[in-house]
Image (cartoon, rainbow, N blue to C red):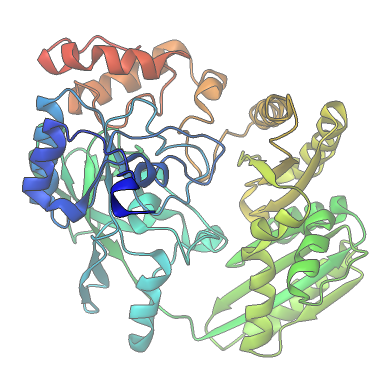
Length: 493
């Protein structure tokens, strides 16, 4: 075969928008070929859609110019952190330009005196605590994906984590934000003072899933490492015993740093994957951690062990050293990956219920699993009633995805019926849009839409997220963006 017989690969024509973005960022920081875009078409959920262009900026000023280019070409803007989200919040359902933060991962400064750190949105959650460790400080919010998830994504979804029982969710640890608005204006919101005057716009942006503005810097609160930590594993023959123990412990006035629950299905998957030493015949285990001053912590540990045994624990193990503690946490934080041994796909929810309702809700969840003939593997932030039912399925099976979605919807309705809510930390995204009316009347949803329209009236920022907008929102967004940018903001809702 001669060189003249070889066919050159078919290249897509370069659009004017791509050309402008390349002049701004350089060709290597603008992705537009189909194979490159495919990598950015999904997150940790079961939703997929492909952006038209992906850009990798390094500064807020570049993002400001990107937004102006998007407006000129009537394109949506979708921000993306690490892609670990579980509700489809970064799925580019209206196409457009995706802003990926892989090149914005600087920790600008650490201020021990004021107990703050200024970071960029692409910084990995765990990297903040790693950078703080030599100073004996840490960043408290710790999602189970903290080794991979980004701080920007955590802020966009107001993420939680195991230790948020004691320390609070992301919103409790963010003091200020630099944001770029939909017209390209760069603003600073909040500051180092714990109680800024005026409207709390920082709180409005936290959990807004990129619909109000693009977050480019984050001022986070940092904390001294506790003097001492104790970690226990309580083993139960029934999940009801374990769930009642959670309410019993907190009802007695003890607030551990974390109380996590792992059910029997998940235990067996984790053991098959990592051989940590969890009891294969248990129906549930509780992972309980307390921290604080050295004085009195051993007594608190013994008190917790006694509580667990009083509520039916057949065994309570206490981590003897840091390695044993790390192994126990590995069981919790690698649980989702281990479930891949049981099924190729999972559909996860994260409804929240009052702790006292955990036994009832988990019992009713079993009935839902039987109704839809699905297996549900449970890991819970049990201390604050945050369920994580993982409905296992095979997407190749016809009708399987629709069946697990129906099961997931019933679980969320169950959570709301007992006085809970539809998300503790994953956000709304695409997954939970249809369930927002379970929580809010139409007047409430309209009020939220008015807030969004006051800050981002053209709605080019992450369209079709947070608020219900109909099943054809993506197509409507593509067709109405030109009118919206021209000034017609009454679109999509």
